[in-house]
Image 1 (cartoon, rainbow, N blue to C red):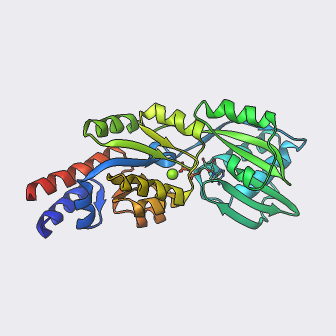
Image 2 (cartoon, rainbow, N blue to C red):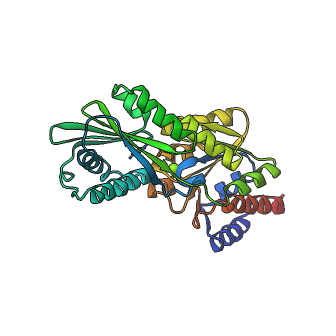
Image 3 (tube, rainbow, N blue to C red):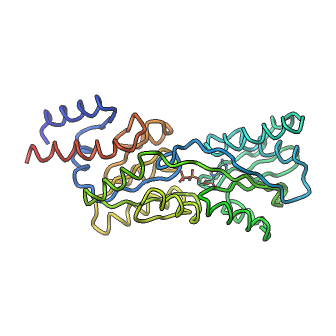
Length: 300
Ligand code: ADP
Ligand code: MG
């Protein structure tokens, strides 16, 4: 595209809340044949809330909540915020305070899995099954049943282990964005195919995929796995746009022909992307692709 055409298009984009970082992004976008979406915070609203919780071991509700709050208070993940809020409410309901949650030692974030740390002398893990497997926490049939039941309802389960034993869990819902299904079906009408890549589990991911009509789902992928998926699609000869909001999406945003960050997402994702959707509305994926198509057809 000519510098003038690029300037006009990026200006138009900016006025619509679609920030296009330069001419390359604009030129690449018109070739896109596949759009890959992250799930949490991209297809879903990203405001998860806890709908149920359960205890699996002899642990007291106070201890369970305090340990969970201690571990998750340090996490930026929206699931962590929901879990902390719920645990604080449970404590209040039981007339107790969240007290021993200040000192977390050896705190670690495990992207796409959860967090770990030590409170006092006790080790705590908060996250998904993958995290539990990684730390060799045995999960009994009671845990399995709770997890399966909730995953099929499109909920994500957050497991808590204390000293290597499954102590309890939370079930979290995160509704899909109202425009998600419409945007995906519109992309299909443009002969663009749709894919989801998520760090979340297969059952929850498939349930969400069905709700929005996405064609292919890849679940339980870590950040580098997301980028690998993009490269795989590119090797099949298709030009790929990736839409994401998290730190965990940044390698994939970089790998994609066009990386699109949700404006409400993390700075790291916004940094890594070629296009920023300031309104965090998925309709603007189409706005960006349209803008590129129109600009490129005008020059050729
Ligand atoms: P997505 O790819 O859908 O945006 P993430 O990669 O951020 O999801 O996270 C994948 C999964 O890892 C979550 O669904 C959750 O099960 C787990 N997880 C990640 N961080 C946390 C955390 N701080 N607390 C609990 N679970 C977490
Ligand atoms: Mg996300």
